[in-house]
Length: 116
Length: 110
Image (cartoon, rainbow over all chains, first blue to last red; front, side, top):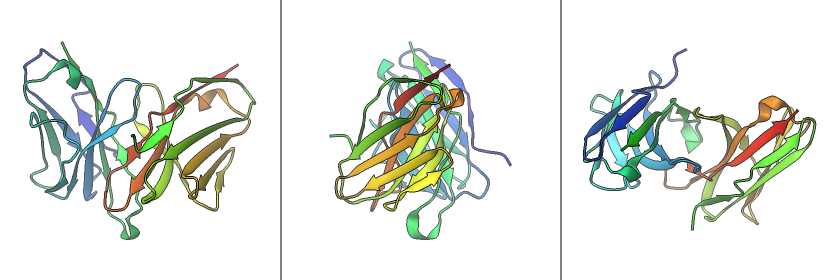
């Protein structure tokens, strides 16, 4: 079946531009996560949705980062006034919410953002 | 201090070798434990869950030591296709997200 998809796969932005990154989770998956992966590092948590509710945004690095999932399916991560330190791969993951809290997160291919 | 600490490597081993990766986690409230595999420029994928009793999947064996807050992954009879970055991952009580280590890069050499 279809996995998690993300678009665009690559994005080059000039410093100061706004960008919007899209995630299409696996159909029916309740939970959706955004992670940021810098070069040579593991993914770092940004934010978490359960259906349309953003339950945790503690990982967003600044108020320039904003995420939404208005209908509980597709999600958009927006970065305003991009800075060079925002250059990274942005990964989206989705999961079913299973009893007991142990679940597998399925990752999309990521969007590689380069800010010049 | 990071939630999960890993030796980034790289580990370069010949085909057929046995290689072991370790990681430590800082929070005793950590709940679930995993190894993820990430190929170059690809997304992370779940390799295996890790249990206190230890678990094995073919050539891969994972072990958890809760007292020492230590997780290990052993790969026997390495194949060229095992070349990847191996990410140590934990979850915490009260949080839904995954906490990743920096990853350990493995290259299996012919």
